[in-house]
Image 1 (cartoon, rainbow, N blue to C red):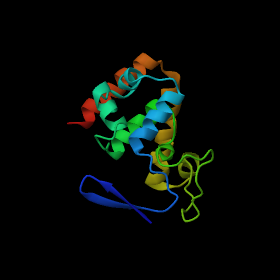
Image 2 (tube, rainbow, N blue to C red):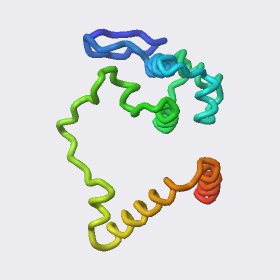
Image 3 (tube, one colour):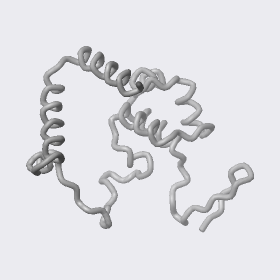
Length: 144
């Protein structure tokens, strides 16, 4: 184990692990995709100065914010923590049913899945500006 000093706080890191911070990884992925911090601001709503603070290690983003960065960069969330070409193996996870499989179930669970499939089909048919209006309305309703 290596011990790294960050300010007054000691952190342990397994030997051989990358010392790259999440912020540096976000910058690396953003630059690989030829995106500016302004592009990220437009895609996420996060201010350019906030992205700069994250990329320079001055701010640690929440999981929700990391999801916003991942969406804007078009990468799965695990890419911030793992640099391999293939997703890391997950031998201890149980497999999950797809939405289509859940829709076949009887009762409320199946009904909810069928509703989501129908909603997905309808959302695929609407234009982006209309989708943005719908999302804005849903956000306002959810915040009540």
